[in-house]
Image 1 (cartoon, rainbow, N blue to C red):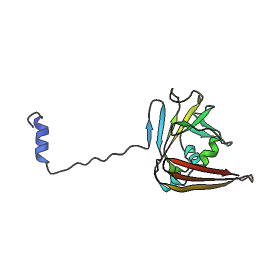
Image 2 (tube, one colour):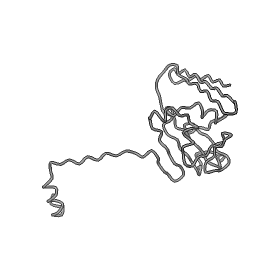
Image 3 (cartoon, helix red, strand yellow):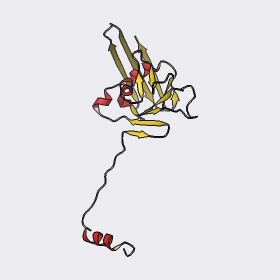
Image 4 (cartoon, rainbow, N blue to C red):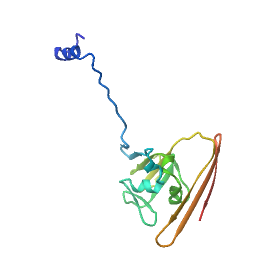
Length: 171
């Protein structure tokens, strides 16, 4: 302790019995140069929402009444799941993914070479939680609009080892 100045050494000598504990936590939003990452917390509120409802709450994402997804109001937005492009009807898929299945959502406003240039308007990457549970799981959703339209979706998953089998139906 001879290297310390006298004032610091005196403070250390006086308070040797006190313990200072520092507790930190990551913020739910992380900002990088090309993306914003939003952590999906395990709360009952977020677990009951589907991915479309979670995306509606993000500041850079707009969902139009006809279920088009826009990043910063730009035209084409690509949806990726675990870093792979989703092929198919993305808005229907996002309605079937529950908040409890999502670890974080990355909103990439300026796509790099990692993501295809097709997402000129932006890219949304859903990073799903890794679960190792084998067996049967699934979900069902039913939506009704004030115009009399009804949408029903069901998904049934069967996981065995490294393979997952999925059966989807909608009406």
